[in-house]
Length: 379
Image 1 (tube, rainbow, N blue to C red):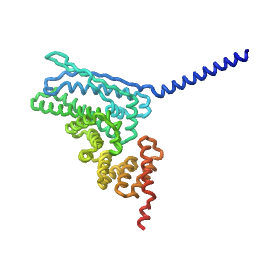
Image 2 (tube, rainbow, N blue to C red):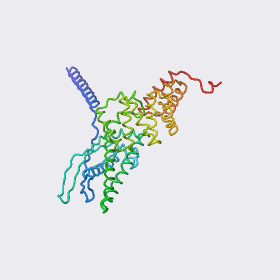
Image 3 (cartoon, rainbow, N blue to C red):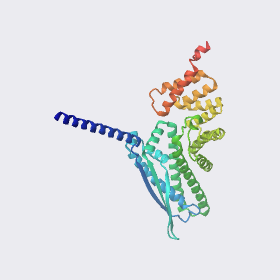
Image 4 (cartoon, one colour):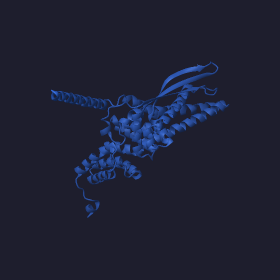
């Protein structure tokens, strides 16, 4: 009898153990299916502007909006710098500022007129929403891609220069007594505000679209991406480029969207004009080379790719694109040589986008077969 009771208790313990294991398995599966949500940080800032007697036609709401956004981004930068992962990157203050300005988007959530008829004021409140997982992932991407990092840093420097110019013009306006000079200063201030707003529009589209695009690949990769509201983004960027021709980032993004639409001629025309304006930016030459390759203009494509090669001789995406261009041109010896260089210089590189290139490079090498060296061919 006692033996039966012991066996019964043992069976109950075994049964409960099985249940516990099953419950634990279900919990693990549940957590895997529904991972912990990333931290969402919401930052709000407000600015009130009282127009002076010389402000005239300059819309005070535009000034208040820019100042509110500046304050929000300053707070966002402080938050981003406090993140443990970002601290491990050992970024400088300027780098944190650049990444935050380029990736954190602010929205106007409130605007009202205050003050009196004699002393009017305009108050604007903005909100910045930061998804830490997305932000950290993008920062990691830019740190690993020097060309994209240059784009973000250039835009941040331009943004800061415009803010300083706006502050200087506003000070001059407040002090100026000559009516003719006041009109000139008003025009300059309006132009600066337009450039600042152009950057805001570009950053908004960049933050939305750039994570899905590969700026180092051609349409064969990017046209597989499904982007919502592409026509709207293209239309806004076209207005930005027209209003602020010096906005290099808007030009790069617009050309890439043209390419995604398979409008290679417009992409080429815009990139040629942008390269003429900014001849020392390797990523612009790379993108132009890719567009030219897709149009079978191989000699011109190689000229653009060789410009980047002189600047960064072991840049993996440049090696890959140059190899593809030589392969399409029918020069298997050089195609294989560039792909072998790619595999050699990325042996210890485990970035996802580089890992994707390696089997493709090997495919080109296998397709070309063993190629004689240049010395052997000349004998």
